[in-house]
Length: 218
Ligand code: DX5
Ligand code: ZN
Image 1 (tube, rainbow, N blue to C red):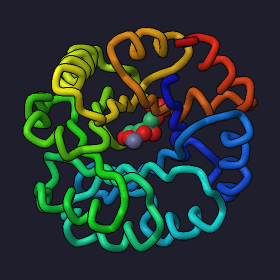
Image 2 (cartoon, rainbow, N blue to C red; image 1 turned 90 degrees about the horizontal axis):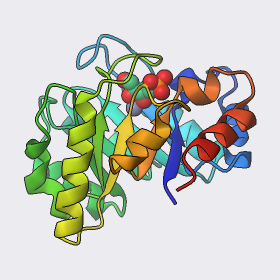
Image 3 (cartoon, protein in one colour; image 1 turned 30 degrees about the vertical axis):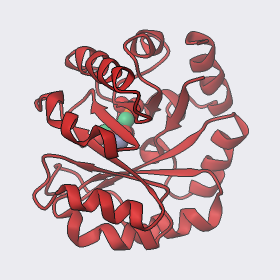
């Protein structure tokens, strides 16, 4: 069964505990936490103190997506805050393979992401040590954008290489996924599907999650 990772970027930031309880009750798998620094992407969201507060509020898997420059400077803060999965961008100044080892040394799962303009092959040398490979299907920075088909072949290629090599790395897709295209991205090979506006933008979170599950039953 594929995993659903609702992005709290589209939740009510004044009621995060309530909104996370809603996705837990609806059977979601990960809480996707979008961290933006106003430099790597043209938007600012939240930092490690909020992740720490979320850690106290839930035992769900915290899937932290760092859209920041210099992840080397901030990694320890996000590890200490209680992240379960930390995904960094391969394009980010300060990213290096050594950071993956630091995440593993802390007993956590490591991911690396590619933006729409970055060839997926950039991830290949890292796959055997990654827990998660994240394909961005929008330009990172904002929720509610339209899915970019450039992600299709990247997911297919990752799926093929991971399966051929017998690796355990999950393929995650992030951006513009909803009821209309969730079955398609699943068929491209995504194991973990991020959905922000499709979960939190519809009013009824439980119905939205059920609708996504029904649209992609396998
Ligand atoms: C975009 C973020 C996404 C975003 C997804 O930079 O990384 O996680 O919140 O939102 P939707 O599902 O609305 O495209
Ligand atoms: Zn994200």
